[in-house]
Length: 309
Image (tube, rainbow, N blue to C red; front, side):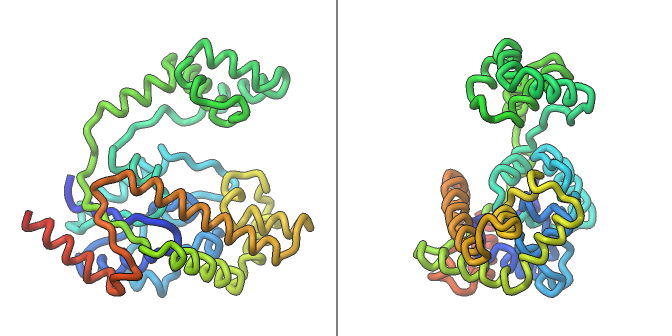
């Protein structure tokens, strides 16, 4: 249950740098917790750490999926858990670092998820939705799993089909699977470290600066290359901030300057949502970058204090 450190916080707060600095001091390896850095070929727009930034520290859960495929939180938990077990088997500490709150919380809780998709059931439901409308599948779900249907909007086609698929595969509603998973004790007892800025304006300035850097590094070319490879613009990966807006610019729906402004706004909004998510966790030890320039030194002090407790 031990030897897991979680570093979380909003985008552009310096999580990667802190994770690497701690890993060098603690004989640790890093497990990425970013729902978009998992995709191959999506490097610039996801701020995926470069070899130079990793400084020889092993990083896991980067480049494990193609942009055209769907990637679920359940798949992340499985792969990340396996990586942590391997790290522990080598006698090292695992540092889980990233800003995807749902992935991180699900990993730490050890949540188990409904079975993976089945081509047969999924295709039948997709065909039914095409021929009769998503309302038809939604009515089926209301009969099979009223609890899940109640919390899903009729426009949420993807989740409606998935919930109904789970019922067809297992004979049990998705709400049952979720309830059973919540009954289990947490898989890990991590030490939580959060990074942000006390002054929100400083965080947003860093977000804007990061977007400018992505554009200078060639975000437009990266998005163009993905589209030329045949990645569907509607794929989940292409809905990521930066990719969706730049793809629209490449289609002529807006200018590059307008796309850049939209990326900055979407990134700032995302940072705000991340803070809202993580601030619900009372176990997080927050480090404010504008008050504590040496975040690594502060984090090490917090960890040592915890060892004495």
